[in-house]
Image 1 (cartoon, rainbow, N blue to C red):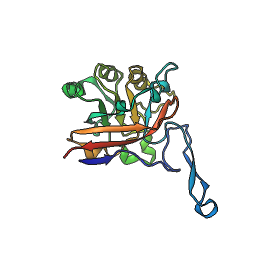
Image 2: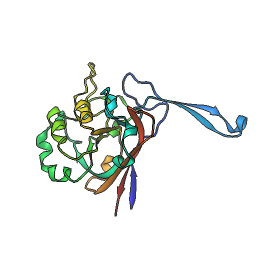
Image 3: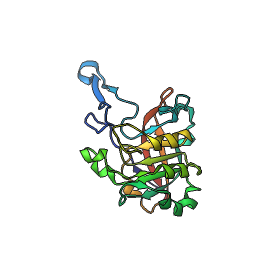
Image 4: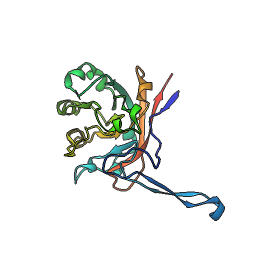
Length: 213
């Protein structure tokens, strides 16, 4: 068995969604002064590699703590769209429909993890078309993940059509993944356990891929 970490570390200088603040990791206690070390964490619920719940957009949407732990674990597939520009249409997904019927997670490999920490990370990555997002709702997907800042393009208007479609169907969203390139051609289990926060609209996750070799 091989485990691949798909999670970016949380640091005070990490990229965050425009309009958010970078996380604070402030020493609260020190070994020298208190005999033990403890850190005060201050951050948004959608910091770093994280998961969005339906409650992120919908007032009556389910929060992450309403899902059982089993919902965050299952077989997955990678869709390599790293050579793609613009939208990912239904035509590019149809040939994978037999696989999509057997997996719980679809991970979109855009290659944008390579731009983590730079300005390019926030724009230009391929995204699902609205039609493709609607088409995916007919499959037994628990979540769709991506190695970019968002599953939607970052726009001045802040519109989130792909979020709207997926979350309305209880398909969770995992953003800011990394190392998806290491999963090309592999059969694997995806595990992305969020922090068990009361009524969470989102939460950081430790996302991993489990490969049986």
